[in-house]
Length: 335
Ligand code: 5GP
Ligand code: MN
Image (tube, rainbow, N blue to C red; front, side, top):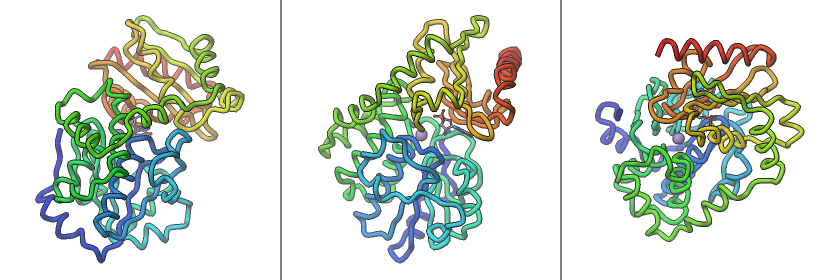
């Protein structure tokens, strides 16, 4: 569904002036889309002569640190709200609710800046007064591209902007395997390629840049930890803190892992549980009509997209497996 708040284009054009200080924020544990969309917008606005900064609520995963502009990102530190408080305009890129910024949420919410949300998740909250959101598009980076065109700023798209936006589209579509059936997505990619980006280098840096330990972790998880519940065509794995340390598990490593069980014909929903200090983090993926956004919203304090969602369980790690199995059972019997 496409959502544009009333008179979005005219109102945003009026507000966006060069005397304003602009902050762009991605979400907690930023992924390729949040980073690519934010940095693409950053370079665009900078090229167009605006006063602009980028902030992420937490650090970048290692495989994204090569992105153009990655070194210009401020990582939010609690009680250091100067950057947020000094902003006149704040862009929210790739999230539908300010709570997705975790530790930065309170300061962002309290800020008096005008907030503009550029996103593609279902059910955007009213945390921003201006919203441009569309669940049909591949990624928030694609929304950023459309937003740039809407502003009439396409002349400022250079190779940096193009590389960042391409990275967001490529990563959020899992290398064009999902959410990428609209011809418009490929028209945008075609335009970005015309600007001279190195597509193959982006692919290499994102996908073939991991440690040997991570590959061994994947082998261990698939062989020793994955369990399949054939009645529900559902597979899951639990990863303890001890295992995370042993294999040097990094932020962002979950992405390539949680998708793997879906390569099995008879698995439609995949879930991984990652033990954290005060809660356990969940990552869910699905095929076709299986809606893990609803599952995560109802049982796991989370949300996301139909085929990719996340959440949290505030229970001891030892109780999590039973809770997941009973939740999934209940969900499948309701739907
Ligand atoms: P991931 O499994 O990669 O952490 O997240 C997959 C998708 O679910 C992303 O689109 C992300 O925005 C969303 N997501 C992940 N964690 C949460 C969460 O705790 N709450 C909500 N609402 N969405 C989440
Ligand atoms: Mn996204």
